[in-house]
Image (tube, rainbow, N blue to C red; front, side, top):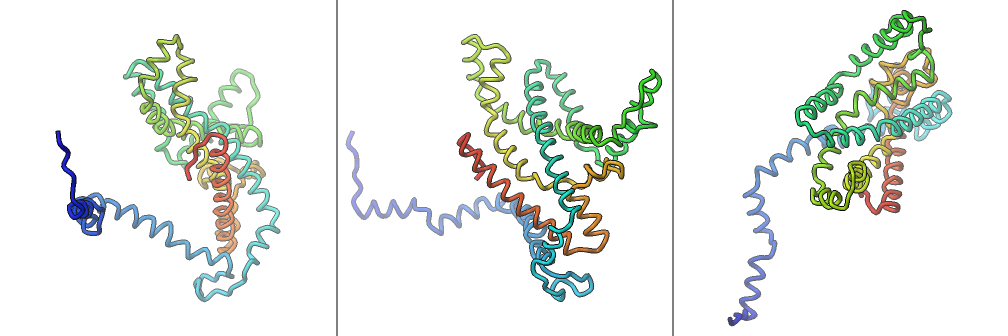
Length: 322
């Protein structure tokens, strides 16, 4: 069979035809305009609620006055940050934030991985669906409601558990008034509320593992635990690394609702975190510059954490998110 060779002019015309020129890109855009239209809402969301408020960071460098506005407030430079770093309660809140987030990472991070593997190993589809529904349900319950449940169950005098313990002659356990017991209750509540929802990502990652790997391992004589160790865990390793990096980036960021609704005056030494400290000192007292300065500090430290975690993950595992 003879091969037809293109002349120089024909070759140039063919190259122009298939080159990704401006006209071709415009045609592709027009052809797929519905897909690009779907980006309008998420882009608008990020512009309005993520990039738009960045202008308000200037309040950390001004003596912000609510009536003068951001433009009319006096510029004070780094005085706000000097006040923050000279505040003893700030360091207590920072310590508690790092401590609770660190313990939460140790306890809550492996929980969805273990649950996802257990659900994947279930052979009955009906049992698997029922278990998934029960595990996902707490994620949709408000922390205010969860706080009420926690006090109904763990309160020292009127909680269900301590009432039952009292009937069998055991002294009540101070779940919500002792620092150690409160920390354990805080961590257990977080696992109960979020572990089931976190299994969705890991179940999706497990589903994407090549089934032939399991079959080959079974032929080699691998049992159920060997399959988990040598096939399942390596298969979801990239997902685990990505989520670990993101969680490390949140070490100084902590939700407001959970420590606020579960905490109380008796355990304030361990329950006062940066979010509640910002609310009580910065917002309730009208110190908006102080609150903005703490938020900026959290953002910068969080960025450092996530970059450091990504660098370490790339160095040790060869995988990262950046």
